[in-house]
Length: 306
Image (cartoon, rainbow, N blue to C red; front, top):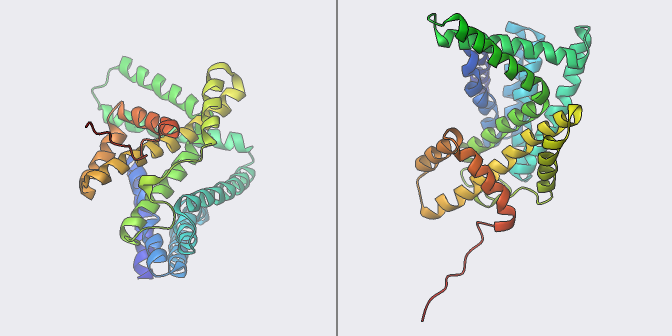
């Protein structure tokens, strides 16, 4: 089972590197083989699968891809089952794992930038430029050969403006992506490895800490009135906090869907609609924000007329 888990993780990691834009979906499932082993059989089994996968990546692709695998996928695949198997609540396990990933990522970034003879900010800019070039190439291929010069130039301008936003919001986007990866891992573990439930409050009753709303309010005002580096900081704060309240809004929806007794497939389809159909993501985020005051999941007293 360890060999199968290691092979699955290796194939998923390799497939992500060959799929381009489709890598995002594959990356969400890359830590799962080792994480499921760790949750069902014990953390040592998951760690063994991660080590074997990293060794295979090292042998076939080199040291840097192996480090990248360990940081992005190996840490959550081992740390999440380890924490939750010891009774740490699922949301706290995600927070601790995210902190460890960011700390190790900072060390790796400093080492990689020093090895390249660049500052960390210049190294990040170079990586963003690569991502922009890849995105431009894929968008041009998607547009087809019948693209006019005017539309090609407009596409380049849009991509350049997106690149400028990415440079300002890169830290927040990185945190949000890492947190999403862990959330998907925990959700699948709840379905596959621990169908009886994970430690911590059930998702339908989950709430973000009350004090977090003040950070969201302060960042919202600062984005409007601040300028320069201060505005960039607040943009990153919003990028991190808004998904938290979207998740709380989804928890509110889960509460009502579970009360209606809908099947898992119908609930999953409902969540997909919440993600992709505008303006539902904004509405659900607003529900998560106002849940602090409205408490939508609080049982309501029914009044009867005599």
